[in-house]
Image (cartoon, rainbow, N blue to C red; front, side, top):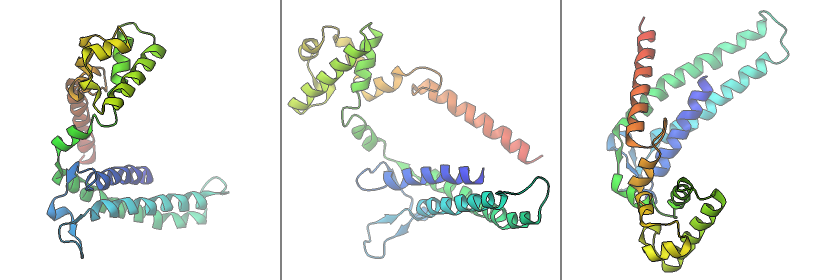
Length: 225
């Protein structure tokens, strides 16, 4: 479990490292949770995230060591098991550092919502929504997939996004592509269209947040008993 927690933290850390880069710019690190560059004064280094990512290797190594210790042991207690103390205690100590550090880092992040909204439709990410919308209109998926591909090609030729294709251009690709398809050719429409349990619709996200909050509270009560 310790190694699995560390792997999850490393994945979160990697997202923060990438998202805070100039190329993405999704998040801004707080000064108190980052360090300055020794060469570039404008640069913020995501040290906590990088250290957390590195610590995952240490905890995975502890797990590998434990498994190697258990290899070929007969049932019941054996003196070999004296070797389990160091990796177990070290893993606990590392997580006691990592968990509050990552919690503080995430809590201090500033999310650049406008930048994320600008990049969300890049690369014709809404093509899937177009195909799914056609399927909901009764179009076979193979045909819907082909129509979505044709729409992407048409948009690429003009150098525009899918939402910028005219009604006539969409209808020429497929008669089923009526003006109503524009409901899903926005990021807001795409997100809201997935209105099922665990989906991205705002109401569903709120449900999951409430469920996670309740689960976390139950675990806290168990820990303080």
